[in-house]
Length: 217
Image 1 (cartoon, helix red, strand yellow):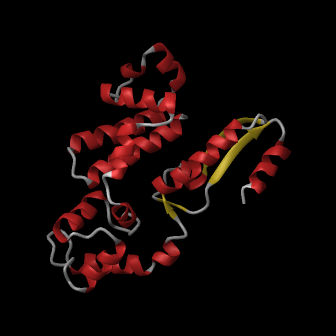
Image 2 (cartoon, one colour):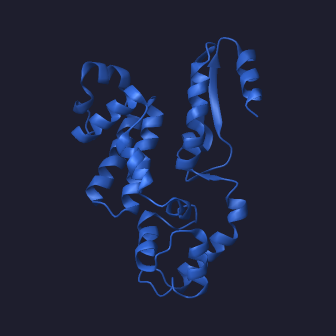
Image 3 (cartoon, helix red, strand yellow):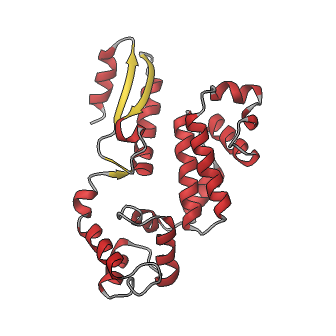
């Protein structure tokens, strides 16, 4: 698995842990590890081959094992189980502007909300504004976000756009004509939401690559 994909998974793990109310230090460790991995100048393949990944500041022993497993196999049982332990609706609630992991967890714990439909009902019934840390303005903002979701849904949260881009990027990189392929645009810049998913491709022969792209529609 490529470095950008590993970074995405580490970020996903941090969000999932936050939704589960895990140790804040553990959550920060994953986010910090993701940022370190993303910005480091050293070659990941070389670091792993030489056994030097653990020497990189910001990447602890637990992360080293997970990064090496993802790099070698493209899979991580811990991540798979963690995703399965969190209701899908909670992740969808993160698409509402102003709702982060902590607030979504608070709504779930206090009101049992697991879906956007349930969130809308709780706001309309006044249950959300009664929660500490929310209030009437917060509830109104959430309702506005839900009502605008039809147009907002045309964009994706960064983590969801990254998941969509992963298999496309892997397929591009597997083409014999492709020398290098990377994500670009909002996804590359780590914007909160992503509209179009852009790629930059260096190729020895553009025609087969374009043909592959058009065949995917």
